[in-house]
Structure formats: C-alpha cells, structure tokens
Length: 110
Figure 1: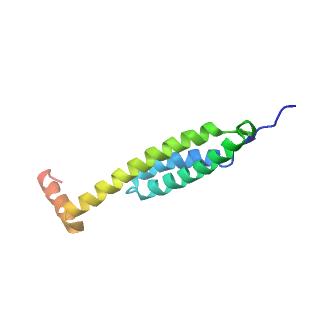
Figure 2 (figure 1 turned 135 degrees about the horizontal axis):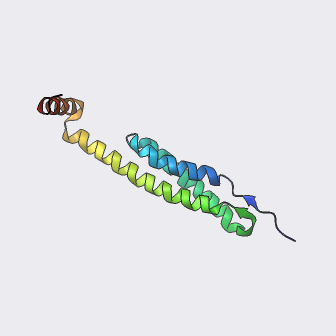
Figure 3 (figure 1 turned 60 degrees about the vertical axis):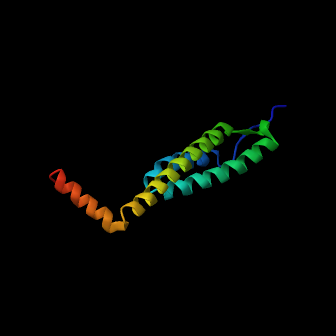
C-alpha cells in the first residue's frame, strides 16, 4: 500500500517570502527584514512538521531554499539598515544629506 504524499503546508509561501526578503532589502532594509523573519519562522514550523513524518510530505526542498533565501535577505537587510543609520549619523541628519547632494550637484554640473 502506497502512502499518498501531500504538499508540506506553506512550502511555496516560504519560498516566496524568502525571495521577497532579498528584494525587500532595497526598501531601507525594513521590508526585507520583515519578510525574512516571517519566512524563517514559517520554515522552522514546516521543518518540525516534516521531521515528524518525512515520507508523508512533498515540498521540503522549497522550505530549505526559502530558508536559505530568508537568511540572505535578513543579512542584506541588516547591512542596508546599518549603512542607512550610519549614513544618517555621519551626515548629521537630513540637512547634512541634502547639503551633500547640493554640493555634488554643483560639483558635477547638475
């Protein structure tokens, strides 16, 4: 008697959230961080379900891939967030950034 395998819950969604975490790092790091953390939590739950009865489920590869992408997205988002905070501090807030932009425009003829 063959066991009918079913799709692991949220396996495709974990993969999609992992991809969105990498894309979301371009949004000041916050969006990527949110999607990455959600994907990691969902992947942890899906891994637990899969490990209880691995012969019953398909789609574990999506969970593993989504988890790897989520880790990459979280790291990239954290770097973007840290760079943004450091830049804000170094350039003395928004006024400093606007002044730097004006200087660059004048210097390069904009």
